[in-house]
Structures are given as C-alpha cells and as structure tokens.
Image 1 (cartoon, one colour):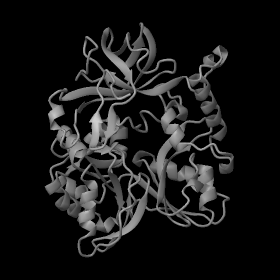
Image 2: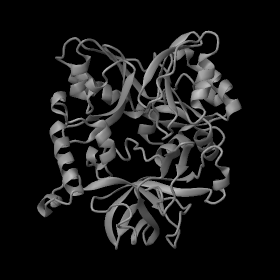
Image 3: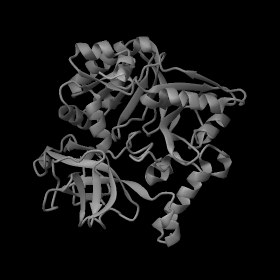
Image 4: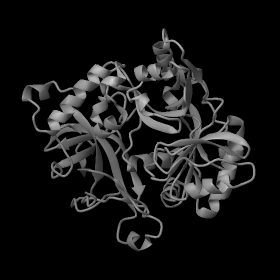
Amino acid sequence: MAASDVDAPPPARTVLHAWHVAAGAGMHAFGGYDMPIQYQAIVPEHLATRRAAGLFDTSHMGRFRVTGAGAVPFLQRALTNDAEALVAPGQAQYTLLADETGGALDDAYLYRLADDEYLLVVNAGNRAQDWEWLQQLCQGMSRVEMVDDSERLAMIALQGPAAEAILTDLLAAPGSRGALPEPRRNRCSQVVLGGRETVVARTGYTGEPVCFELFPPTDAAVELWERLLAAGRPRGAVPVGLGARDTLRLEAGLPLYGHELGADPSGRAIPIYALPGLAELAVSLIPEKGDFVGRAALGRQREEVIARAAGCLAEDAAAIAAVPRYVRRLAVLNAERTGPSVNPVRAGHPLLHGGRSVGWVTSGTTVPCATPPGDGANAAAGPDKRAIALAYVDADLVPRRANADLVAEKAPGRTVPVALVARHLQVTATGTRPVLYPDTGR
C-alpha cells in the first residue's frame, strides 16, 4: 500500500450515511465523501427518475451563505453570471467561478433567499479550494459576510414527473405550511416541512422538467428523507445513488466538473465557451456587471464562437483559437451506423475522423431508453439501452455534418462508429423522451 493511501483521511459522511448503509446501498468514495452509488441497480433507479421520481442525497455539495449590503458587488466580482438579474428573493441562476484564462474553477448555483442573503452551492470535491478562492476575493470588500453552511444545512434532490405531487402531499400534512416555488425553473421558496424551515428550489441535475432541490437543517434531514420516501413510494419514487445520477446527467447533456469543465487530459484549461449553450446561460458580459475574474478572456472566447458560427473566423485566427474545440454530445452506433449500440465508450478514448485525431471522449456510459409515463406503446419500437457520451472535439466538426467517418478508439486498432448529435434527450408534454440516432428531434 502506498504511503499516500495510508495518510489519506477517511472519506467524510453526510447526515444520511447511516440510512444508506442500513438500506443496503453500495457505498464508494466520491468528492471526499462516502456516498451511495446504487441501492437496487443503476438502470431501475434511472428509469424510476424518468417515469416517477428519484430521491438523491446531495449533502456532499458545498453550501456557502453570502449576506450583507455588499453581497451583490462581491458576487458580481467572483461569479460569471449577473447576480443583479436575481431581482427578487425566490430566484436562482446557474453560474461559474472562472479563472483569468476563461477556464472554470467550478460551476455553481446561486439562490437569492432574501434582500441581502444568497446561498451559493458548489461541487463537493471543490468545496475547500472554492472557499479559499472566494475568501481571497472577499478581502478588502466591505459589508459582506460569507459563512460555510455545508454542515448546518443538508441537501436533498427530488427529481421526476411525480416530484411535485409528492411535495404537495408533504406540504398538506400537519406541521407543514407554505407554497412551492412558482412553476418555472430557477425559482425557490422557503416553506415549513414537518415543523422545520426548508428552502425548496426548482433546480436539479437530471434534465427532468419537474425537479426540486431541498435544503433542510441537517438535524431534520433524515426525517424529511423518510417522509419523502413514504409519500413517494406509492407513486413509484425510489432512492437513487450517484451511479444513476451520472447516467441521468449525461443523458441530459449536462457537464461534470473534472470531465467537461476544468482541465483537459493534457492539463490545459477547457475554455468555458467550449460549451457555448452553457456559457450563454452562465456568463454575463453586459457592461452593468462590471469587471470580474476572467471577463476579458471570456469576451475573446465569445467573439470567436460567434465569428466561427457566422463563418467569418479568419484562418490565422483559427490557428491560435481561444476555443479550438467544443464539448459535443456523442451517440455510439452499430456497425452499420443505422442505430444505437450498447457498447459504451469511456472518458479518454480518442476520436478519429478520416484517421486524424480530432479530440476525445470526456464522459461515456450506457443508459436505458426511458419513455414518458403512459407512453408504453412506443417503448417496444425502440432499443432497451443505448451507449451515449460527451466529447471534446475540434470546433470545425458539427452534428450531422461530419459523422460518416467518425470513430472512437477503444484500444489501439479497435474502433467503434460514433456520431455527433444535437441531443440525447427531449422534453415533451408528458416527460422526457430519448432521442435516437438518426436524430429526429430537430
């Protein structure tokens, strides 16, 4: 055993750890915590979330409370999004912590709880370094206080078509009061569940249109978890581990820090605008926001992405591009390229186009093909599973135009056909539906 293994501290535990172990969950270290990977198996937990509801322990995430009259100027300096766009309590936004090169130190969610009170949620593995970074940026700024509330507040996610009905049942029970956030994504409210004040937000990491994240006091988390399951099981809800959390986010095309955000395998920062859709959601370059960490680099990245989309990027500019590659969705195909394969590609597998190296896979897995509730007649027409991925590929490769000779190299000399696609998942009136190659969800 290596000395580093002996010296490494044991993984931390969330307040729900004992419950997970008693429920027979398979546990594994993740982000510095001993977390449940699965309870039954990844596939049924994935399907339950798409068809009913999944309950996730996300208390390993970091939670920082920012308060005071100087909170907004501080957040404007430290984060990429426009904190002033949260014009009233009860609103939230996706945002990033950038460095001066325009790379992501982390991605985060910002919730406005009161006039001068905000909650910032960051990734578990980055909690300590994010705290240190934000503390440095906070120095010299007046009338702002930042407190690490990660141990005082727990975090639970409830995602899927039945999630709102489950929470409505709990709010109607004795000892509870308040209203769920208005039915728009990125809204939050403060309610009382079982006698304890709890923040409820319409946010999440599964791609589900009906999604909630709850922030109860830590000493109330186990009771709330059990009440959510008691109300949810008759509707098909199940506890879900990190295994299905990963397949769900990958099917939704959502990035994971350390894969699609952060550094690439060579150690270079992945530009934030390598994910153009995400950057448009998370980065504000309006003059009113003022200067912030990474603003100049992000401005250059955005200009280049716009010029490339318009077909007016100069050749000499392409040679020294600020955004040479984009993160794209990738479908793994059968040998005939007529439909999906179940043979997954994995992070780090090289991508070749005409024999030329054009990038690599950042995340890859096999997911079940879930159909919306009540849509069982269509389920028989499609495959049970499909292999999907996200990849970091040369910027001149775009979905549906460069797929005839694109392959992933799983081992030297062993390749599988792949295709760049617009999406893996489509939101419908009844839920979510898998989009299979050839991409019909245009």
